[in-house]
Length: 577
Ligand code: FES
Image 1 (cartoon, protein in one colour):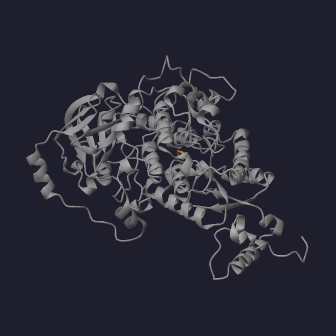
Image 2 (cartoon, helix red, strand yellow; image 1 turned 120 degrees about the vertical axis):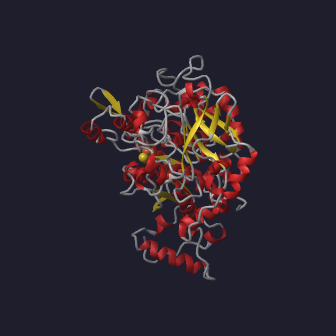
Image 3 (cartoon, rainbow, N blue to C red; image 1 turned 90 degrees about the horizontal axis):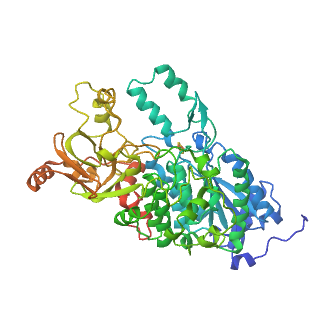
């Protein structure tokens, strides 16, 4: 660079690009840009580099986030791709959320990460972005941010972990964590063995190794068009994952000259495709909330009754835990998203586009025919002829609830029984294993006051433990009902997301131990057998829980929407309400 090199042309003022975007307004734009370049030069960049288009890279590496352990090398690979394609890569940190690391639950902070990421995408100078996510809440948060900022963005996930062989069986987080812990509670596994297995459940870098929320969201991001289809399932430690990162960088540069915006990707049709995929993979119940939140950012509504309609006509084709047998590495090796989508091609809107501007139909026509039918079934021999999720309505859930039937016990689908109610998480922890608890294997367990507005923040507590004294009788499943969520890696006959939640005065608030509840999967209904008079009497005596006084808890309490609206914050929706 010449010492006398003139400052970059003021032409950038007319059509700000790269570092000239979003300059602070001091009343002198040239000075604002001069100041910005001066500080950027303190990092050693040449004028030539600073005049290039800019790709922002949302770097979510964190010592608290094991699922993003590989983020630093992914950032490096993205940067290679960006530089080789002729732009300047600039990484920036955002909130990073890891499922087991956050109190009260990572869900409580998904919207904070979405808000943080949206603000940084909107405020910093960049022409396009690569968003590195992976763990459950990170991908939806980043998609929400991309949708609201409408910044052309490539989604890059860290990828799933590998399963490990241990004493003759394969293990990976976290279905196997739950399975072994349930066996330990039932007295079938010794303390020594449960301790030994603790170090075998997550033995490589990456997100949970089953079709939990992280991988479900990766598949959804891919079918929405935010990443190439095959990159949804590449294991975290494969070299292909780094090549995918390099491609993500190059694709982000392509987006600068061939822009495809999130608002072009997230449409009513692509959201319906995503729902079909969610059903066909036997995906996580959480993904329904996240998809509703992402779609809601562009004004597309996910209707629970539509979900039910789609569920009746979408078979489960992927045989992975927690609903089946395999792990994400098996899905990838079996052909991954492309071969799954080919199998359900007639159910999809093939004119939806991806970041390259290709239609879904064109992507599915690309070469490559290998498919392993052990993990990606043919339509003629599905894992299940109908989809994994159903929605339920009734006097207990006027605005809906969800049941993952593919992970539930069919013998419990039609049931009327007495219920045992827990008033909140503290009550649950205090009494569930009490030997004197009045509970039988035939009862229905109910947890309330754990919904989105509560201090608990709608945790994954819907997988209520089977009371120890029942588990020790060999009982593996009971009907469990709550206004919270369950992990995408969990299983059981579990009714979730009861809406409205108890804490806002939904009918669940008025259910008491001893009431009778009727679940009918056939009729898609969930009711408590109480007279209108008794409901009214209990409603009149109900006291609304106190609200938090300050901070993120208060903002969430005041703004969070119910599950059918994705538990987004009202003021972050397009209409701000
Ligand atoms: Fe991060 Fe499961 S804990 S994906």
